Image 1 (cartoon, helix red, strand yellow):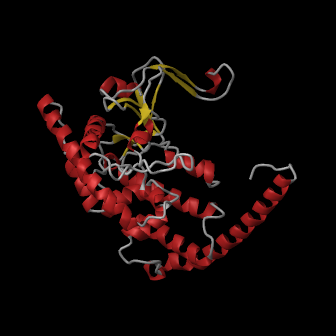
Image 2 (image 1 turned 90 degrees about the vertical axis):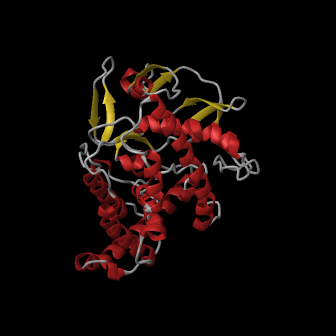
Image 3 (image 1 turned 45 degrees about the vertical axis):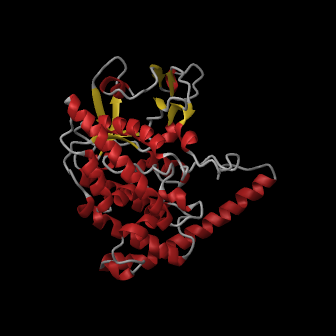
Length: 370
């Protein structure tokens, strides 16, 4: 937040104080204190008015929204993203800064997906990488190793021998795509926040001006290709959530592509303003966004950041062979397939037994964590 306030014109609330658990008077946990900013959540303003807000907190874009209104919103967000894209870093990882100092350090990555793995899947946190990265390929290889650890450690990740086989094949094939989709291997690297989306922006519904951008806790210096993808949130939700609404991936793409084109035009307008101001980037962000979508790099980047959805995304968008074909595996991988299926079915049975015990204990008022 300090870097963005210093280097950009993005409307962030003024940072008053922050600290770790030890700095909290009641030892409640890490904290940030900022000024209060009034406004409506941008996602609520853009949402489909036919949604029943009482049934779900998930918002989907109004399919009939006025394009002129959306252009006003997109122009602002495009300007934010272009300003962020002009900041360069020399390593991949989390950015730290000591209080009272302008010096910045890059430490090991700390991402939203790491948080999901640690809190939802039983991932062993001591297995996360503890270093920064100087090359994109090294970081992607670390992520695919992370995906493999997740595959072996989440007990209920596979619900049948067939699903275990499909997961095994996808996660062994995915790393082979790194050389195809990796660009700018040695940097420079860019600030990237997975949660930079309308749900974390406040706006004035009368003027359509965005008044605050919030929630940067999982911001890292990341491969530039993440920051140069078309935003995943142009329908307010990503493709994984879209499918939960009972829609198809074809429905998602049909709805997404017109918004993607509209947003890239907003990026082009932001680039034109940047040229006039003499603050142009060495790369055209609009060109990179088009290239990302046309080459399917968008889907690779989205999948590599989504350990809970990577397998589905692989089979829908990146698997040239199509289907869970064991012939895609080399001899060593093929030899490990049946033992893997056996382990996952044993883990699933253990998980189901523990789940049953948990709910039985809960009914008796004697439950422990599950």
